[in-house]
Image (cartoon, rainbow over all chains, first blue to last red; front, side, top):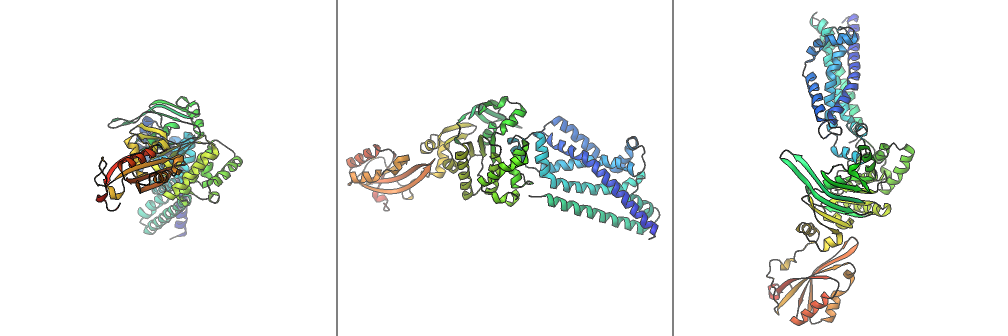
Length: 217
Length: 353
């Protein structure tokens, strides 16, 4: 493999990491509160609002049912409105964030469900407000599980970011398609695949270790 | 301290409304250790949650320390709850927090500064005997230790009332005893009013001063523990007590013919119950001295304590001339004890006698 090719691989890796990292941060900031809302507004929840919960849940399902490749193309006008362009690495992050928010929401909801109701009841018996229950009981108690779930989301994002090549988003997937597939360079294809595997392993390893460290059960 | 009036609680279920509590009146005085016993599903857990409004009654009124709980706003209710500590069957500790942080939890909710928290938590750790476990996580503790953390946490906000919801039901007998000792200790030291929910008569017997028996959403029987134990009125109460105090005849008499009429060669079986001071009186020795010609055989004996009062039970067999036996009976009747005639059993039926 030429030196240029290796440079291209590094650049593509950088783009992938950039896309995934920034999308993940933004999606988490919005997705975690969404998950908290999904859980707490449920019937019998500490902020019970069953009507609102149904609405929110349907919206989450709707976004989650759109395949990423279609979502990416379908929201091009919206992407253009936000970042001023529909092409490029930054533009690719808009659909990545939008696809990840409901995913994170559901994952966090699942984690929060694992917190035994008795703990919430105990906190209520001590005079905790709903906000205090969210910050001091629900989130700390489900943190190991949330970290494990977010790890899964990051890995899904790595996969989705590879599709971003379709709108000129760059990254490893883009490289694999343009050089490995369209220009018949199997060694480039192989190299991107290996890098992706290592990347995912690394994310899983770190995420798993962090979740384990946080878990005191 | 706690006054529940006409409490009703109805749940909606797919098969229509289900009444869990059907008009409960309960008055719990300051400093009492009040037991509420019932089978699972009797409504006792719902009832205790009506005190701090974790469950809001469908009808009725809840007055705690002079406050009408049902009339409070959400924020006022949260404040009022800080005066009511609660411990649970499954402890409900934060698994992600250390013992220290678990006990500090209610104080942090109120925004107490860390210095004051430390001043509060350290003596509590000592009170429950967990000074060396402050930095451990709940998963590293035994069940009994977890409940001690639960108790310390419940006491952190200086409550006036402690609610115990099946607090010892998940613990083994030895641990149960030590937790009951601790609760009794706290009641005495801190003059706390304690409400104990349980399905175990043993807990009521060892800990409580008063008891209410709840059955199918109503209070079946209520009184001091001594009264209820020695003179249970309702079948459900008798059932609870029979677990602890066997009312069966000694094996040799079970299934044997018990007659109501005197005959010369039969034993008269008597069940005697001694309560309080009289349990120490040498009543039987007196009877034997006074009626030497009446032969007295002891068939069963048991001495126990209920609410710190001695409580003895005995089955004796008497035999002798009819009129002397009647005199002996009259002697017993004049003493401070309860006697119950079981019947006459023929001597030759039971060689064991």
